[in-house]
Length: 256
Ligand code: SAM
Image 1 (cartoon, rainbow, N blue to C red):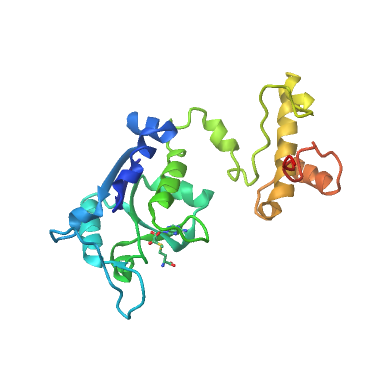
Image 2: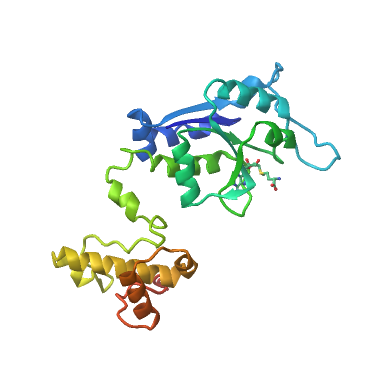
């Protein structure tokens, strides 16, 4: 998987690209990431990439020519999928992450200031992606979010592929709750079945727990989830208030 990033703050990516899962993916060569400074394409000795907006008003707008020159040069020969990070884009979700990972070659454009001259979107962008309905000061954090999510799809990056398959959203449900030592915390014991060694029973509990978590926290997901007959039956039991594995409901209240 190759990802190129265009930004005026390349230094923001330094620790991110050498740390944890993304760092290991880069080191192993599974993920090839190139972060480029847009100012290298500014075309003037002051390395200017912004100007005042036509029509007046406050703030600065990123000018089109550096972006167009940079994207054309970086995309030459390989045709990466060109993604503009923007609050106006399609919201990133699990399906979009998989789709982007399958493309194998991405070029990410990180805006700043009031945004980028509209003609960049119209000429050298394939798709606008947002990470949520709120406005950040730049596209760098959204690009990192996208890179980390996409990298989890690259074979070999996550050690246990089955853990990606069980993660929230992949099956249409939220993940089941997880527990580790110690066996009791603040009077709350680990569900007994998880220490029973009965793997069939543990799998059944995990499915029920995932259904219960989804029903409690994100019932909207259940409209789209592709559930088998056994899962549907279990869901009906949960909806009727029977057989809850005791994982639903709100998070614990804060200590006073
Ligand atoms: N004036 C723009 C608007 O309201 O649509 C917002 C510009 S924002 C301050 C500057 C840059 O941050 C954008 O060009 C974009 O690259 C990035 N950005 C901000 N919020 C984002 C979000 N939710 N998702 C993706 N990128 C975002």
